Amino acid sequence: WPSPPPPPHLGMSVEAETVGEGVDVDNEALNSDNVYWVDYRKDRAFLGSELREGRFKIMKFIHASEVSSVGLVWEAKDMMRGGARVAIKTPKNPSSPHDWPSNWLKEIKGLMTFSKLSHPNIMKVYGVYNELCPTPGGFGKQGQHLPYIVLEHCPCTDLFSFLEARGAFQMRLARHYMCQLMSGIEYIHDMSTSHRDIKPD
Image (cartoon, rainbow, N blue to C red; front, side, top):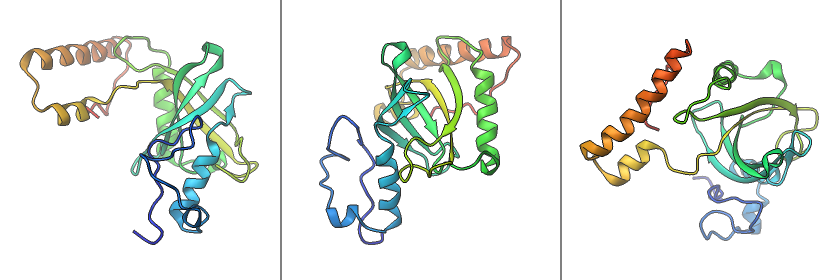
C-alpha cells in the first residue's frame, strides 16, 4: 500500500468515535492527500446526514464493494417507521444523472420491479430516490445528485460466508435453506418476474 496505509473503513459509526476495529487514526494520515484517506473523509462526512427531508438518518457504514456500481452500503434509521433500521445503497461517487453508469441504472430498474414484491424470503425494497447531496464538500459536491436505494436491513451474514465459517451443511440444514430459496424463486416466477443473478453471497 502507498504510505500512509489505507484507512480502517470497517466499523465507522456516527454513534461512536472509534473507527475500524480498535484502530487509532493518526492525524497526519487522516489529513493526508492520499487517495484512500480522501475517500475516507468523504465517507465519514456522510455519517449523520439526513435524506428525504429527515426521514432517513445515516448511522453506520456497512460495506464497500470493489466491483459493484452500487459501491457503498450504509445502515440508516427510517424515522417514518419509528426509527426502524434500513440499508441504503449509494454509488461510490455522486454525480449528475446523465453521468450515472449504465449498470447503476440497470440495478435501479431491477429493484423497482422488486419493490412491488412481498415475500418472507425476498429482501424488501422500500424505495429508490434521487436528491441533491446533503454534505457539500464532503460526500459529493454541492449541486451533485445522490441516487440511493432503500432496502430491508438484514443484519445476519450471507449464506456464502456462513457456509465458509461453518463448513459443509448437514442434509437437513441444506434442505432448510434450499426450501426457502425455492419458495422465493417460485413466488418471483408466479409474479412473471425472473432473477438472473442468484448466488449465495
